Length: 105
Ligand SMILES: [Zn+2]
Image (cartoon, rainbow, N blue to C red; front, side):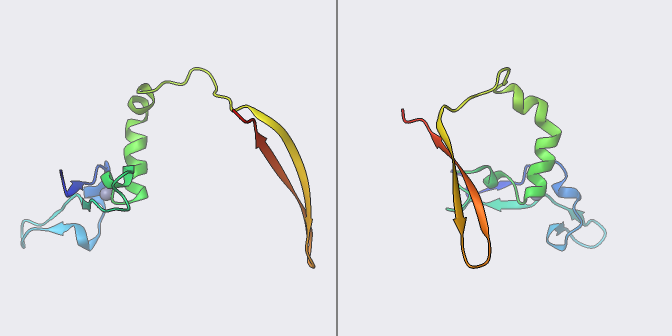
C-alpha cells in the first residue's frame, strides 16, 4: 500500500509556493505536492489532494465525468414524520428552532 499520493489537483504544480520548488539553479521547477497518507485522511478524498483548492480545481475540471459515474435524473427523498417549532429564550433573546423529525423505519 502506498504511503503517499501525488496531489491530483489540476494546477497544483502551477501554484507559486516555496515548498513546491525543486531542482537546482538553472533547472528549477514547481512540482506537484506529495500527500502523506495519515489516519486523518486515509478514508477520504483528502488523501488525493493537498488542499481544498486543489480538490476544487480537480472537481471543476472533471465534473462531467464525475457525475456520469452516478447520474441523478430524479430527486431523492427522505421520509419525515413531522416538523416542530420549538421556542427558546434566555436572558438576552429568544428564538425559534425548527426540528425536522425523520420517520422511523
Ligand atoms: Zn495540490
